[in-house]
Image (tube, rainbow, N blue to C red; front, side, top):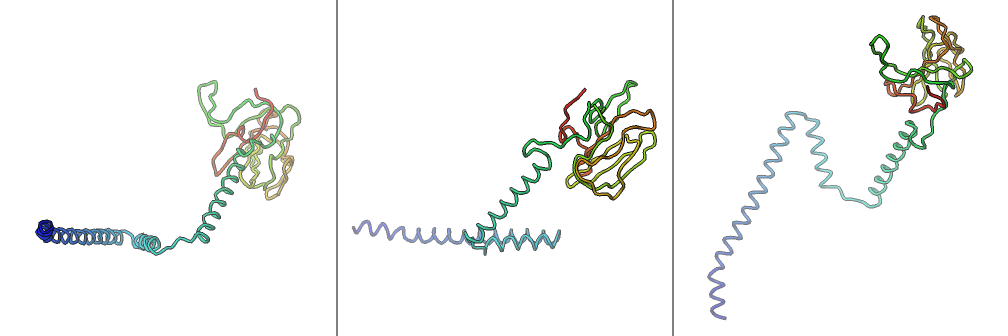
Length: 228
């Protein structure tokens, strides 16, 4: 027992020295971390005062916030419900929800598709919509309720009617006569006009769909029964 006690006393000073050294090392490390954070915040302040303030607020909230299962849980649940509603609306707009599509503006065969079209002389153009040869009848209809925003006379190409709907814009072209007027609100299935152009009298419909200012392929949103 005496030998063990002497042994313990002999190394007691060493233990105290090492513990103090480790303690001071931890303190120095903490000071270094604080200095690094301060330098970082000073740099941010020089770049953008509002950004620095936001970061400080985020750090402060993260340190002082106490999670409440009742309040914070309800916020998370409400936010999740909002995301779910947004997803459902997006799918509905894009007709992905149940794969349903709008009725066609006119029944017939599609002879000029959407996208780049190559002509016999080798030149190419981009078709913003599709061209439809009607099966019967010469009066295209609106595929959805909306507001008539523009009626344009394109001379040899006939009249073009633009209708703004809740989630998209549709265009109906190659009309020789228009039944609607600008600013008129119409229902789904309303007759647009009579097909025909001043150039060659062809009876076919040019039809476009625009989403967020960009033309899209109508075949992805409208169900056509016949194609060439």
